[in-house]
Amino acid sequence: MEPGALTAAGLGDLPRRGGPRDLERDYRAGQERAVAGLSIGGYGAMAYAFRNPGVFGAAASYSGAIDMLQGGTPMGIQSILVSQGLGAYDLWGNEYANRFRWMSHNPADNVEALRGVELYVSCGNGQPGPLDPPGQEYEAHEASSLESSRSFTDRLRQQGIAVTTNYYGNGTHAWERELHASWPTLARGWASRRRTCSGRAAAGRPGTHPREHATSKIVVLGGCERQARVALHESAEQLVDLGEHVDAELDA
Image (cartoon, rainbow, N blue to C red; front, top):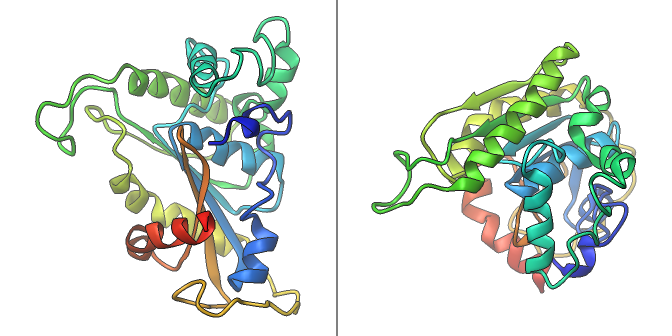
């Protein structure tokens, strides 16, 4: 995540680089889209979805900070800013003095905009789990993500908005299993947003992606260290296998 990106008031707007238009033009991506994110990227996935109505048919968060005003989440965001060499209030200001601004970017305060989007939310509790290596220590930030995620999904259900959840107990920031588990939800979202292609020509740069396919899907992954990583694949297996290749192309 580049420090400059954190200071943008429009965080949650689609990225200038690697956004849907670029992907449709350069990678022959289709218009059936889903967005998914890990950790702070889980916030990004839900923020992209609610701030860009109609763009994504599905959104998923793995161990995400989704209710930005829940418990210690604001402090966690401020610590990320400081770790990037920025001021603690450089994003949206103070969470109390600038409450409305925080709320305007907070998925949990804008759940109505997610009605009709297929949603998937999962998180562990921070205790070492079956997918963690030997010696894994307790992760307090995973426990914080669990509180934030639960607050978000509680808000959804209070408003009668459907969401698939998997709060699986012991586990830390391990997300690959959850990507596979969320695949049916993402696929349902694509199906619900299926529409006729506009007929615009897709340029398609030869050799930039191993599969130049007019119906490729869009998935955006993110974490604390990156704003977004974009991959185009037709299955979860391809996403996992080829993600590093697409990362390299976007970084080139």
